[in-house]
Length: 293
Image (tube, rainbow, N blue to C red):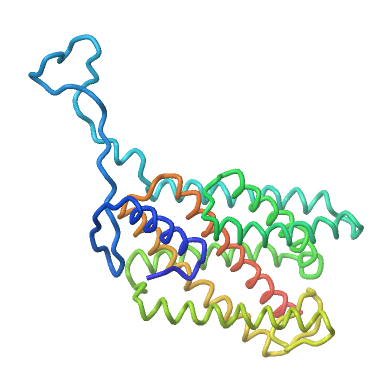
């Protein structure tokens, strides 16, 4: 089963490919075949053998596999760190880029383009460099701060509502996954991935048409722009699909821990979670703007 999040999905492609090249055997977990990590032990002589307790004795044999494996705590801590970085950068851009001048426009355009480029680069090259992932969070924070301020000017209090709703949806999905109320079955995955491709494709088409003065009526890009019922319905669908993708992402993280992925992939998982959270925030903020208009 693949995640609807391309970041986490390609993480498993990279892991499986590297294991296949090594020629190691595999064990079945779920619907995908993975190879178990080889044991890693410290050097040293055993009890009762020459050299035990003597010079150069390295101590008893110790299995170090767990120290190099990704854990749920690793993913949680790194996700929280990236979210905090987004919030701090957004707060700075909110206060420093106050006026609608060339610098504000340059910051928005640069952050938008840079964020899109980094999503593709980090995802398709399977980069786990924390500095590059942190750069993505900073760029998104700049964009979030500027745009969120414009929504706040039009509708006071809407940003706090959007943040609270985003975290509530994320925690709700985590609880539903924890207690297996919603399961990441192959059929569920196919449905969610298909729906995600559909809404993202329609959004892209609508954005391109809007550049030429035409709009399908499913999305609007100004906080105070008039809208119709179709735009509200489409936002609700986008929020629902975005929320369900977290179920698949939680499943992929759990599988990664089960097969013993290296700890460095915790940054990759955290990056995927942050991408999903930012997408969900944008959709909720847009919906609240529609309802407040």
